[in-house]
Length: 312
Image (cartoon, rainbow, N blue to C red; front, side):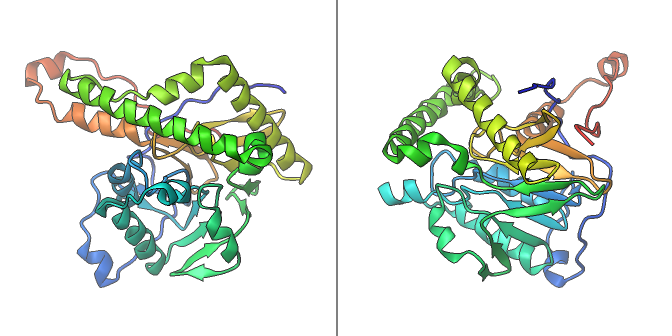
C-alpha cells in the first residue's frame, strides 16, 4: 500500500459558499441563521451513536444548524442499537438530532442513510423511505468534477465484526468504559482550563496493534472501491477521520461524533474537506475572551486555513 502524506483537517465554517439548498418556507424563516453557516454541495456524517452517553449530540445539533447542503449521507452507526439493548439512554438532545434530520428532509435536503453494524436493525428496511430519509445498503456519489465515490459504513471490512462478533461486543463494552473514563478526565481538564482531549483517540493513534488495524482497514476499503472501477470511497466505522490517496484511490473517512466531531463535505467545484467541528468550538471559546485593543493591534494575524482545500 502506498501511503500518501496525510492531508490537514481544517475548520470549514466560514468557507466559500457553494450550491447549498435554500428554503423560504415559514419553518425555515422561523429558525435563526447560524453565525457561521456552512454551505456545501454534499455532506457525510457517521458514527453518531445516538443512545449512548458518549454521543456529542449538542455539538452535532450545532453543526446541523450551520449546515446547508443538497445531499446529506448518514454513513452508519447513527443509532446505537447495541447500547440501547443493554440499557435505555435517550436524552432530549438525541431526540432533537432525529427531529432536526427529519426537518432537513422536509425542507428539501436529500438524506441517504447507509446503516452500520450498531444500527444493523435498519438493514431490514433497505429500499424504504422514512420521513424523507432513504435507507440503502450502499450508495454511489458523483462529485461535481465527475469523480465517483462508493459510500459504505465499512463494517464488512472488519474481520472482528465478520468472524467474531462476540469479541466486537466485548470491545464495544471496553470502548464505552474508556469513554466514561474520558468524560471524568475532561471534566477535570475543564476545571483546570484545559481543552478537550480524547483518551480513546490517543490510544488508537499510539498503540501499534490499533494503528495496524486502521491501516489494514483503510487499504482493504480502498482496494475494493478500485476493483469496482470507482475513484474513491467514503466510509466511517473506525472513528478516525482521514482524507488521502491509497495507491491512487481516494480514501475518505468522515470520522465520528463521539471523539473527533468531524464530517466530510464537498464544495460546489467537487473539492473535498474534513470539517473539524471540535476545533471550531475551541476557536469560538478563544474568540469569546476579551482582548485589549492595543494588544490585538500589535498581534500579527496568522494566515487563515479556514477555506484551504484538503483534496480536489
